[in-house]
Image (cartoon, rainbow, N blue to C red; front, side):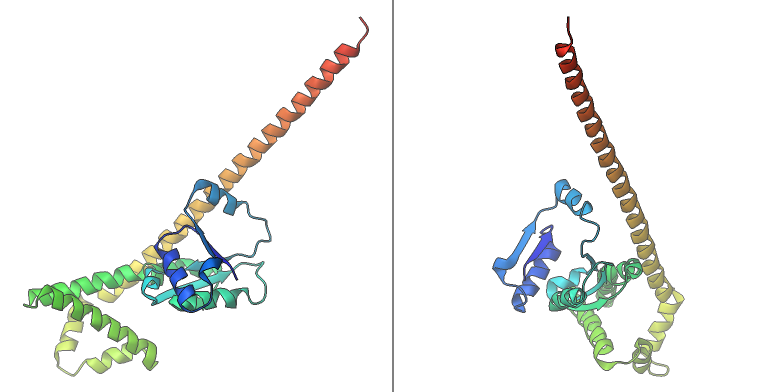
Length: 247
């Protein structure tokens, strides 16, 4: 199997390392190209029945802990989705979803690492405020989120149940949770996911509009070229007629 990347940025590098390390694709069977207008134009004039699967990964693929959702197009064949899913599973978790879910996926897991980084930074700042060294506070905050995420994934318990298990009656954690609720913590996170998803939808609609405009421009250019070609042919015919006319 051969794999090609349109664009050779950090995500392509992470995926290629994952594919190679898991023995899915051999290094000599991988290709990549930098982003360019000609490549983008080529991708937009693909044949109508091209087998396409859209993917929404996140930056955690760089450390083989990514979260990806792929959406098969209508012309994919049996086995295409499972093959692409297997590729993305080399760098983390991968679900097969639908096209209409990708904006929500963008808002949740696509943008999600930034929410987590901001949370880690805030936790660390709180630790520093209360007297901890910055390096210790940052590592404790990061490990805390890592451990909490691992418990959700491996225990099968609802996050709310796990939260309740930490909150002893009249204790420090329930007191802290009260402050988070007072500050609208959960509602703010939900609003962030929604805002990101709506922005993704808006950007997608604008891109579709741009593609339609570019397609129309190309069709107009082609029509103009054909018209010029016909006009040149007519001119040649007229010249021949004049030359063959009796004086």
